[in-house]
Image 1 (cartoon, one colour):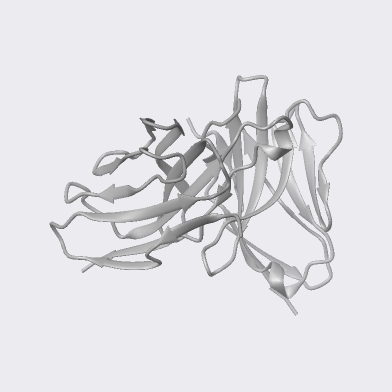
Image 2 (cartoon, rainbow over the protein chains, first blue to last red):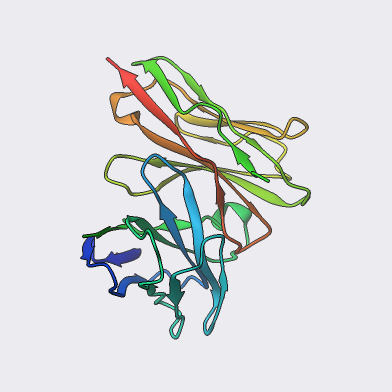
Length: 116
Length: 114
């Protein structure tokens, strides 16, 4: 089945540790995104990539890093510099197809990160 | 400046009734798209409906319709014949241009009452 796969679903991190969240898509989409969601809040953009080997910071990039070595993969590393990393992380992808309605952003099922 | 505003933190609706979730937006780009997503308690984001800035007619998808008032910069979601399974968070979002990130509102929690 085509889609976006995030792993792990649940992750616990000790303070001071880096952790990497995986995001893989088999939709052949060019663009990929990482969002953070805090309880009862909307989604905030961390990083996005419109093409392989290129990415841009979003609104809350501090304490996070990404790479885009392959079209289908966009891993997010939550570093120890991120002071409050406990949140729900969503990966998404899209592609600029012919019709605007097909240019929808599709999301993975998310990863819950808890700092213990 | 906040680009997407959802003024209703929570809404209640009786089963089988219609409900309108409000969304206003702010942009100076003439080309933009407006989206609504549903997020159940499981956390997944489910795409519901899309409206392009140049679309002349309001978008509809089954029980969902988007009341697009361009001059007022409003893109309200209307859910007809509410069902218990409609209970969830609903997010309005906008993108300017193609292949750019979505900007989200803070969401509205809809509770459907039997």
